[in-house]
Image (cartoon, rainbow, N blue to C red; front, side, top):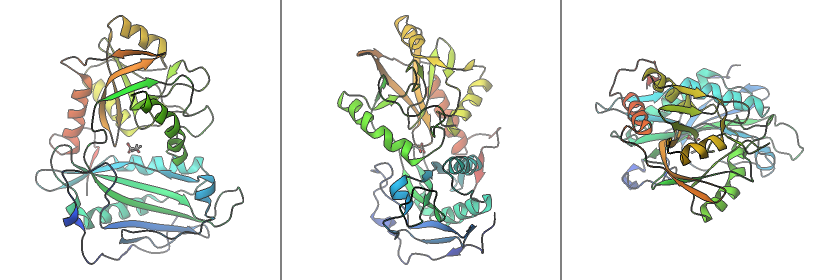
Length: 353
Ligand code: COI
C-alpha cells in the first residue's frame, strides 16, 4: 500500500515546553508540541502530516465512537547521556499495530509511513525527551475509524496518528494484585491478543472493584475456567518459582508484549530456565504456601518491570518479598541499560533516531 505524497510539516510557533514541570509528570497527561496524522480514504493512505498538537474534528457518527474500531500501540524513546535518542524495537510495534488492525478489519499501515512519521516527529520534539534513568518519551500511535454513519460495518475511512507524552514511572506506589475469579479480559477466538481500545475499557469496571478492595491491578485468568493466569491487562506477567521463571504463552487472549519477549531472551541469556506454558492459579498458590514463590512481576512498555507486593486469591492475601537477587530488578536494569545506550546491544533492539 502506498501514500499519495510525502510528509508535510507545519510547526507550532511557540513551544509550550517551558510550562511543563518535568519532575512531576502524571503518566500520559502532558503532550508535546506536535502530532503526526495520516488519513485513509478511497482505499489509499493520503498525505502524512505533522501539525501542532491539538484537538481533532470528527463527525459525531464516526464509527470509532459507536463500534470501537480503534487500535493503538505503546512505545518509548530514550535519551542517553550524550543527548542521542533511541527507540526500542520500533518495527515490532509497527508489526503489532497491523496485526491488531487486521483483527478489527482495519487497513494495514505501510512501514515507511509509520517510521518516517515517527522519526520526524521525534526530531521535531526532541527537547521533550529528558535524559536520566526513569525519564522517557512515551509514544502513543493509534488508528481509528472515521467514516460517518452508524451502520454496524467496517469504516471505509481511517485516521492514524502519533502523539507523544514525556514520562516518568507508570505506577507511583507499590502494586498489589488480585487474581480474577469472576470477570474476564478476553475470550478464546476474541480480540485479546490485539491492542484494541475496547480491551482496556472492558477492564475498567472490574479493576475499579479491585481498587476498592485495595488492589491496583487484576491478573486475568482464562475466561473458560479461571484456572490459568494470563496477563495483567496493562502488562504481561512473570512468576518466579524457585529459580525458574514461568509465563503464559501468547495466544489469542494474551498480548504479544515486546517487553515480555525481550525479558524471555534476557533471562535465557542469563542462564535462567524460562517455562513458557499455561500457569495454573493452583500451582502459584501452592508455591506461595510452600515458600517457593519468590516473585511476581508485570512487564510492559509503560510500566517497564513492576514487582508486585502481594497477590490475592479467594479472599486470601499472599505477601511477596522479592529476594536479594530479584530477577525483576535485574531485568529492569538490563533493559534500561540497553534502552539508555549504556551497554552493548547484542540483540539489535536499539534504533537511533
Ligand atoms: C503500554 O505499556 O504501552 C500500554 O499500552 C499499556 C497502557 C495501558 C499504558
